[in-house]
Every structure is written in structure tokens, then in C-alpha cells.
Image (tube, rainbow, N blue to C red; front, side):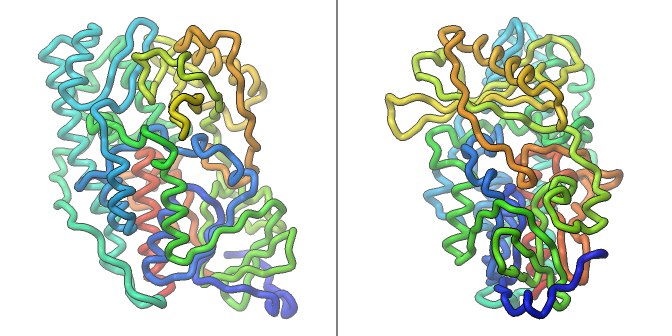
Length: 475
């Protein structure tokens, strides 16, 4: 990477070494850390203190599917060696989420349920509803196979010599689907009116893109994903981030919080990180930049040109955390809701608000609720957008009006997975993700833009594939 200064002899004398240093706590880097550690690499994850202090629900995916055999999450968890008891906590239920329109409340989940709901709310007649749901299920299944093949394909080229025992190979994977099975079904393109608005709201809620629309392959996967049901609703012990953190620590990986500025240096052809609040030099055989590059450049001392020239994120998924008494939540409201303020496209900003609730350990205690919307990354009136989000929450929970209390959280400067980008031309799914930034010293970028169209499963795929590929490089 051009522009990195060489560490001085005095700095190198204070060096502490790992096989891989992961800069940032976003989901792709945590998945990659697990895979690297399973190959025997010693891994250090550096998290920004403000990000580490945030409520976990603010960083969780909106929709987590079941971890049963054959699913993307199930295959990834198996590849990461997560305990069976953890996978069983993520058994899917029939309901994925509710889509609330101004004049409808549609339960979206397993195919029979979804078909019945589309008909009951007048969004489609029986025959067209069955055809739409069936075609979405088929195309989503084909895309699931393609994601699994892409996620594990780096394994065929990796070296098994990194330090300790080689990592287990990926689980059995299906053959790639035939090309004509992939893409957005024609039935989706024929949708209009309220049904088109519902589809647009789902894509906004499930993708991690900033402003562009998901490509047809990704859109079919996102829309069909809900037909597999939802999981992880029971309690905070099903959160993805703590599960992965525990797994990394059992593999002797380490975590460290940092609060000051950082500097990237070249330590005898290995990448190093100097911390402003410490005299240590942290050196790895590989460095993974697991944060938006433009945001990271702002906190680095003498940032390299590749980062300063990165396109800044244009949107952010801004979440507001509430704690609400259980009696405020209507009995028919699910743990995940996509709320649309209008019945027509285009839907922008707080026109689409997602809500997710979690129960705490106390069965009678309050619920944690996170409501979020995609807003401009440099929104000039964030208070107004938060007020609109709160208004949406109050509209769904009438007993809460005027009594909602927000739980404030620190805002990270660089370790911020709420920042959303659009992929550069030619790098979006179904293209391979591009991760290499530099060969000497070996630095890799795990920006989420290339996989953002696939949402949560894109994060899994990017981390799984990158971890195996980098393990092969440093072997």
C-alpha cells in the first residue's frame, strides 16, 4: 500500500505480533476471524470503544434466518464450528416479519402463510398469489445454492499450513443452479400498486445498499428469504455478534478496544498498527480493514491514498433504541416489523422504518426495541428524522404515545457498520468480492459494498470467503 511510512527501529522493538489483525468489529470481519483462527492463525480484533459500548441490538441484522442444514446461516455456522446448541437456538419460526402498510398488516413467512395473507389483504388474487410465492421460493433457493458455492469456493485454493491443525472443510454444498433459474421472477415485475410498494419496502429493509436497487439475483434472494421464516427472537443469547465473539475467544483470538487515532505502518514488510493511546506497535502477517475505508481514513494519522480516495458512504441505517413495557406492544405485533408510511413508490428515508424487539432475561421486564431507517450519511437534521422514526413506533403502539424514552448510545467514528455504500461497477453480486488492497505489506479490505445487495447473508459470504482466502495467503 503506497504511502505507509516504515516503522522505526524503536517502534519495532515494542512490537507485539499476531498472524492477522482485524481492524473493526463488523460482521464480515468476525466471520473471517473465526475461519482464520480455525486454520490456526492467531487473530487480534481491534474495535472502536464507542462501537463496543453500543447496545448489541443496534448492530444486529434485521432478519436472521434459521440455522438448519442447507441454509446459508446453517452452513456458515457449521463451517465456523459453532456448537450445535447455539445452532438450535436459531431454529426458524413460520413468521419472518410483518409488513405494515397504511391499510394492511401482512404477515410474511413460510409460503402457505404468505399466500394466504396476500389474498386476505387484497394484494393479489389466489392464483396470482400462489404463482408469485412459488416463483420467489424457487428463485431464492437457486440463489441460496449460488451463495453457498461462492462463500466456500476459496477453500479449494487455500493452504492448510498456518500454525495449528487445519480447519475443517466446508459442509457438503449443492451444485450451482442452472442459469435460467436465477434472477427476479417475472411475477415480481408485474406487481403494481400496494403490492409493488410492499416489495420495495422489503428490499429497502433487507439489503445493505445505500441508494441503488439490488440486482435481480440479489433481489430474488432477499424477497424469498422471508419465505424461510425467521429466527433469533427468543432472547439476547441468540444475537450473532456475541456468538461469534465467544467462538473467536475459544479459538484463542483476542479483542481489544481502542479510543484514539491510529496509524498504519510498514513493519519490515508486515502491516502494523500504532495506537495513539499506547506506545505499542501491533504487527500482523496480514491486516484486514473491516470498516468503511473513507470513515477509517478520517481517524488515521497519515492515511494512505487508497483510503483517502475511497468513495464515502452516502447513507446510514440510523437506529433508535427504546425500552418499552411489554403491555405497550400489541398482541398481534411480531418481533420484526417493516412499516411503510405510503402505499406507493418511491419509498425513501423514513418512508420505510424497521422495528425489532427483544425480550430480556426478566420475563416481566421491559422489551428492548430498535427502530431504524436509512437516511443520508451527513443528514443535516437528524433530530427530525429521529422524531419521524419515533412517530412511526408510536403509531404501531398506541399506548406509548408521548411516553417513549430513547436510550442514547455513542456514535462510532470509523467502526460503524451502519454506514452503507454502493458497490463500484463490476464488483456487485454475483461478481466475486474484491478484498486485496496491497501485497507488500499484505492488507485486505472487507468493505461490505460488493456483498451489500445480499444483506445479512452477504456479510456471511464475504467473511467466510475472505477468511479462507487470507488463510491461504499467509500460509
